Length: 145
Image (cartoon, rainbow, N blue to C red; front, side, top):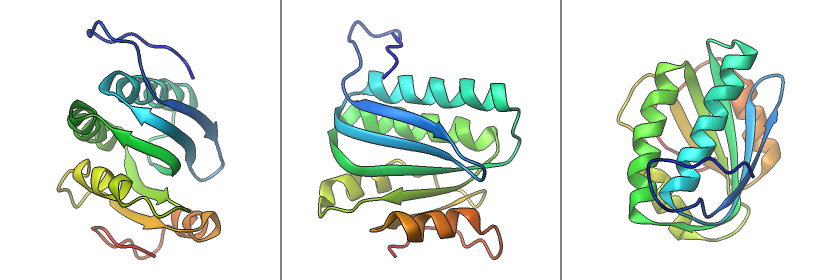
């Protein structure tokens, strides 16, 4: 995890790694998160996008080992997602191989009401990768596969 200090006096709590794939960016998120960690991951995604010069892109986020986030984590997530939409985000696939419903509720709370992109939650990586790589027939809004 890269440590990026925001305007807060707290250090990021939560772990992540980012990988560049042909059709999407892949983020593995784990642990309990605070707003500073959410800010850090968004900064790294934006930096990666600037380096790759992609105008339309997709994001696959594995939250199978995600525990929970603080209330301010959700607000930063919503603000950050709006910025990612401005940078061409089209689809977000979340993978949750576990049964942690708290993760789903927090993920749902961080989705801006926008027809610019679509998002879904999957219980397998293969289904998520198939959906995120298929750009035909985009449907707006949440669904669980």
